[in-house]
Image (cartoon, rainbow, N blue to C red; front, side, top):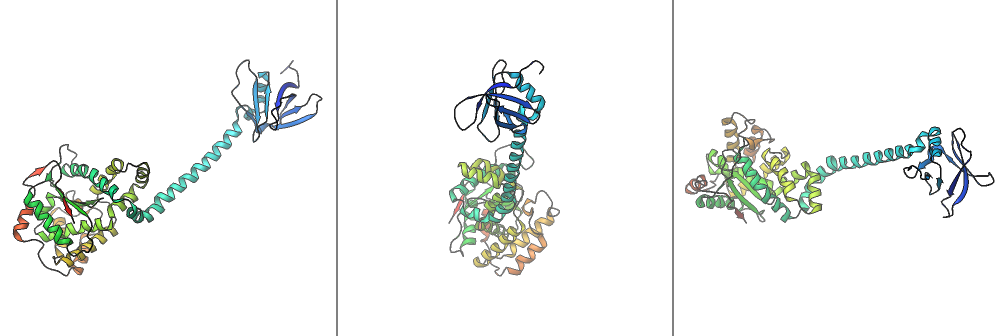
Length: 381
């Protein structure tokens, strides 16, 4: 700074008027002193509140500001900024302001993250059933429609193979399935809308999808020893539909993507993948499974069908597959223990009638004598 005049000439805008004032600027360790033409102090800018308004360019004036105001200083000599930087390093780069902005942004981010966490892990699980109830039926149906072929492929090729999934299409078998479904739901005053389909797959499985879709595998029908066993499984899945457990589970497990999809108006493809993963891995809560079992037994009792078929089916298949953890027996994933479940079903089952006549049962077992690449849906009511 040797040889440089002090104080330094500058234009000063006080932020109250548009008028430029000819001033002199003195630099000291505490900041800048702004003096009028007679040497009187006009303003003092503390070092930590001085801002660089714009990036200096060689040969151009340097513009400084005061934090929290619209006051400005235009200094003709760039060396003044260099001198001030030496006295007050944070001011030259707006460092203090940046630190404040970072701290404020961090605080806002933390608050926002906390709000999202509360919504995701507390409010949405509590409200999942209510959210499921107010989701429009056309949206649920569309999600089920889009998810069905994905799930069919995953079930038909559980080892990751690729190919075209096939749906059972023997008319006699499809007719028998419709007869069974109508028999099961005959005692309901307002039965839920159902769309039933059977996938050609060896995997022993059954599941519900949003929109009233109930899917059985041919492996499950072959594994059953009586129509009452199929009736029990089918009634259980109808229970999931009636309670809207699948849509509720979607909100619990994929809440953010579901809500965003609803807001932007495309809930199908983004959520369908999550539905596939959820269904294949059987991620209903155990309370939801118990509720579906209770619903199934009530349904079978009202229809006069032997409710013990549900218990017999699960016990026998679990034993045949080597226990509940066997990969072929996906239908038990996260379900209550088989023994507990069978005991609860038997304790509340009161009917002992057949689910289907013998000839209808044989037709149902032949449902995959013919297959198609598109599903033949049994729709009820």
